[in-house]
Image (tube, rainbow, N blue to C red; front, side):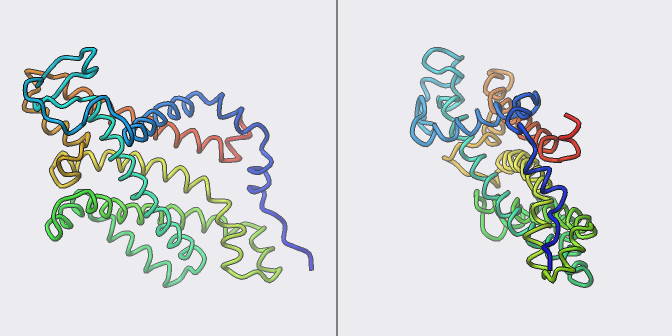
Length: 293
């Protein structure tokens, strides 16, 4: 008995020449990589060094303009804004990584299961996803906060639950399309079971969908974490957070508007960078788009 043919998508993705070269030529992808790399670098550096302590209060230095001592100025408590931005990047990266990883692992497993089994299994998983998506992330976080109190853990859990539904729906839709392809029928004829086909043929052919969804979900997680912290149900003091920095700066917006600019700019650039990476990866990984470049 001959082995089933390898899927066309697998062949072209693996054999696509010059992936790195095409990535370097993709302007949007490179811009996104630089912006996202800057955020991750700031988060990593903040683990071992910041210009000043991000939690140190020096009232005599409050609301200072940018200078050689404080590059981004100081806030209403005299804390160094650059140090807080770097530490806030760490919070955003941690929340994004954990929430997206939770959603990707559980959601992908559920989506693959629904696509493979179909029938009542698919209906149950999709109805669970519909029910979960009916509740916005902020509402889920508020409900968790009411029961367990505010904190970054509840924010991560709320984002993770929401991401599970997103990944499950995306993976299920993409998986069903691949299950209808000829090479999957050939694999079935060769005697392969559903689990073997899922990991050998379905998952490799929808990896681009998962990667793009992960980058988009990462961007959404940063926005959601900032919104939750702004409302007071996310990261709690003294841990710095971009959203709480915006919340605290609004009362001083007419006296020192610069303290609201920096966290807002950090959020905008981080989300923009991740969205550009997602669009770029979709173009570079999808074989149909790769052939056009």
